[in-house]
Length: 156
Length: 139
Image 1: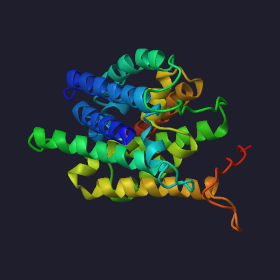
Image 2: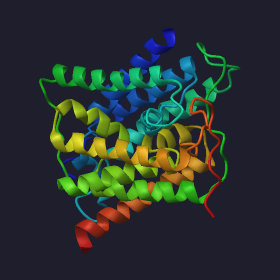
Image 3: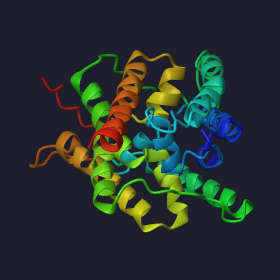
Image 4: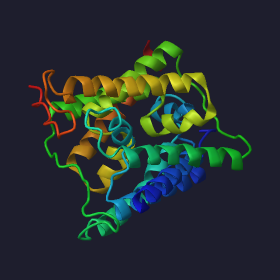
C-alpha cells in the first residue's frame, strides 16, 4: 500500500511537471524539433532541469543497498547496442516528429478531452499491443501466460 | 523565438526530475512512461497495480494543474487525424521495441549514464528533427 501511494504521488508530480513545462503542447515540441523554422529551445530547458535533479539524485540513490520501500532496484539489464534499440528509437523518432507527442505528454494531454489526443493515445497503446503480440506472447499451445516469458532472440 | 518559455520549462523539468527521483528512492522504479503503459498490454500481467496508479497520478496531477490555472492547457495539434494515428502506432511500437521513450531513456537512462539510453536518445532526437525538416520544409 505505501508503494501505491508513492506511485500515485510520483505520477501526480510528474504530470504537474509536464503540464508546467508546456511539453504537453505538441506545438512546443515541433517548435523545438523544427531547427530550420522558428526554433523554440524550451525543451532543452525542460530536459536540463530534469537532468539537473536526476543525475546527482540517481547517483546518490543507486549507491544505496536498496530502495526505502522495496527489496531491490528494478533497473534495465541490457547493455548491447542492438538493432532493436536503434530501430525502435528510429521508429519512435518518426512518430514523434510527425505528431509532436511522446508517451508521457500524450497521456497527460488526455485531460483536455480532445478527440485527436484520444486517437493518438489509442493508436499508441495499439502499437504497444502489436509489439507485445509479436515479441512477447508465447506460442499458442499450452504455454502458461503467467510465468516469465523469455524474450525472443534479437533480430539479425 | 517568440514562444520560448525557459522559466516554466526549467521549473517543469525540475518537478519531473523530482518525481523520477521519488519513484526510484522509495519504490526502486524507473519513471519510463512507455514502459509503465506498455507493461499493461504485455502478456505477463504482473505489477498492474502501481502502473495503473502512476498513470492515474499523471492524469490527476494534470487535472489539478488545469483547475488551478483556470483551464489553461494549450494543446496545438500538429497533424491531421490519419497522421496522428500512424504516428501513435509508430510511437507505441517503437518505444517498446527500443525499450524506452523520452522519459525512460532521455531522463532516467541518461541520468544513469546508460550507453544504450544515450545512443537511443541521440537516435530518436535526430530522427525526429529529420522528420520535421522533411515534412515541414521539403515535402
